[in-house]
Length: 220
Image (tube, rainbow, N blue to C red):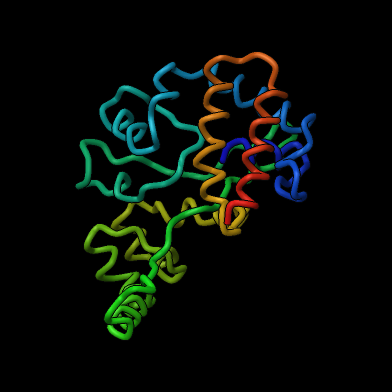
């Protein structure tokens, strides 16, 4: 996701063609910038997911994380030893705000469900503005409905997490949603990770990523 963000910062939106994720000159710059950032961080950053990073922050083992997906519970005073503060992204060197990548998960109903009407009614209830800004948050959930994100009470409970991060979401790049994309992401992420660990010429890594991209479009 940070690779996409840096491609956007360099002026090119990824996934505009069907054969390569992004032109290799842009992709190489993005990977190099990402490697430079990683080189300035503790080595443990390559072994942590966002939750492990936040756990390190609340334990005082780290003090700042520039880019990670948000988990609003860590902004709740009663959730951890020290509540975290969330904000927008830093700016690019020319002053432009960086664009994160918007992903997330959803609520789905299996086509094999024997009780589709009940499942649909439940999904509608859970996704309703009233539930999202009350019971859902009160039960520890992270809402998806904008009404909840803009609610003064929800923000009070969560240390203004939603108020402070909503502009970043509004400006975010929406990752692809074609059938097969998630397989690509699961497979290409480790390739980026490998480059960050070992370095070298970024082009062979980009070629591997492009091959995974082409395969992901054919596999489904």
